[in-house]
Amino acid sequence: MTTTSTVVASALLPLLLLAGCAASRPVLYPNAKLNQSGPAVGKLAVQDCQRKADAANVDDGQATEVAKSTGVGAAVGAATGAAVGAVLGNAGRGAATGAAGGGAHGLIGGLFRSSGPSPLYKAYVDRCLRDQGYEVLGWK
Image (tube, rainbow, N blue to C red):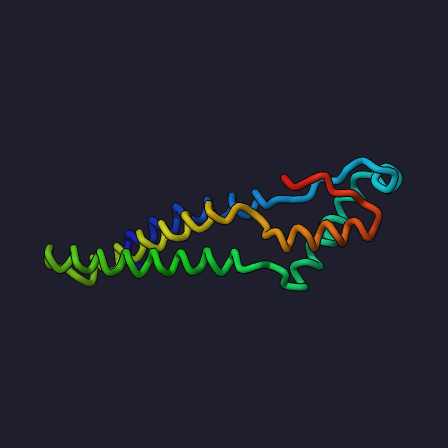
């Protein structure tokens, strides 16, 4: 891995961890079911429904779009870097640097365009919780 690639990878890791921590979750309305079971059990019900939605693979492709954005960014960056590198005398190094920068740009852009769980995923989790007697106010 080139020095530039290492720097880019090191810079992206904290952002990826933050993106993972910022996942949307349903907010439960304090109805009779939540009041009876308590917030801790309600939280477990949310986690269980999210696991079921993950297992059912109801995502509508947002992760695929992020991956595609990263790939396109890397390809454009590599081509641009190779062209600049050819003019400056080192097309290979330019391509590697461009690919790292373009991939990073595509990844970050894709993460920010992906605003959380898909509507289908949310509907699945909401229905799962409703079937257990919980009411979802919204997601945050």
